[in-house]
Length: 110
Length: 427
Image 1 (cartoon, rainbow over the protein chains, first blue to last red):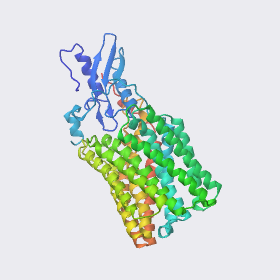
Image 2: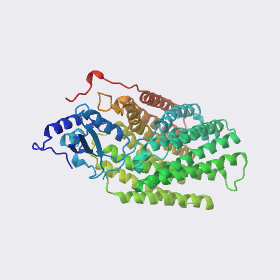
Image 3: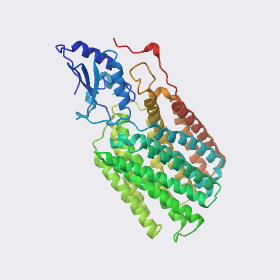
Image 4: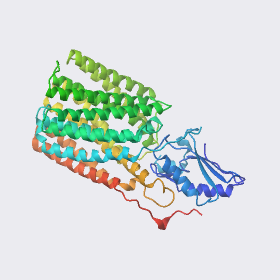
């Protein structure tokens, strides 16, 4: 599952901003941002002023889970102050290497 | 599928183990230097027992406990059952080990030594309880979890036999040789506790660190069966029948179990996405070379049965295999634990250091080459029984320990660095 953004999406502009912000959230083990790692599955804006980020981690029950979630929340909150940020952590589909961007793979020397 | 998520264990359940282990490591290298005559003496001597227990309990088990409490949630995919229980096991292990080392070094047999042994036994019991109750919370037990559970049981058995041994020193009651029981105690600790725990942890962490996976899970099942069958046959045969040529067979079965585990790790390594090999992982690879050396020496001891071989066997287990593994893994775990504690709440808010910025990586590279030099010099010194060569190797070990302890303290006492001028705004 790779995060996709359509230009026809009514929230295109906001989602672009969110993706740019999430590109600054770095996985402390791999030193690659969560977007390029393919950890973010979906970004959704609801009419109830909720910003729902559906994401996963490369390892279930990773000790850095809270740090990464805080990172996501901390970069999105200042940009979308009127939205309630909800991070939805999921384990299906299971994250795999094919979800990474090419640049992320290159960074790992692959 | 949305899982409720947990947190890392409390910091007091992990950090005290790392701090104390670093002190014991330095103490061990100093004791080795001043007790270097033990390298040419019989292995059943008070000072040798003190050295072995400083290494096995103060250095290796201490840090293994700390790392295990941190990693049990990852391994079992659920929260650690109790951080308080973990801290209690730390207190028992610290006090018990200190009492044992002191009494062994001065060879003071009696209740002080026995109480030290009982405290170490209690720490192993508390650890086992925490592992079992954490496993009970887990909904998804895998083969690597069985290694963790079995190793905890073996550690408990090792400490029970240890208590019986120290009681027997003061009030002899064994109807079999004390030395024969000592060998069983040592090998349950080596094969049951250390090898099985490291097998269980490594097969989960290697894919994480290397971004890899192996589909050859059957190798792990064989590894579990063979390591346990070999060890149990050895224990019962050795206890009831004494030393025999059958020991070759048991050692071969255990070695086959280890080979299956290493083949699994090799497959993981081969399929890795992260091509660059960090210095910490180089230490891990080096440790496996020494583990192979341990097995070869074990076969040689069975055939030739000489004093140098036995000393080298112990040195390769504690200083070669286990120390290489721990020195490397300390800097793959500790900086993340401390970083997580200090920066988790402000991650993403502003520019902050990353875990690799918390220690001096170059020092680990120096340690790597010093480690190889020290082990080569020690091997030559032990084989040739040349005390001044042995002392030279041990001096290098003191240097390695100093670099290690300073780097560990640099991580632990890291002060939070926030660059307000570079606060991320994203507008």
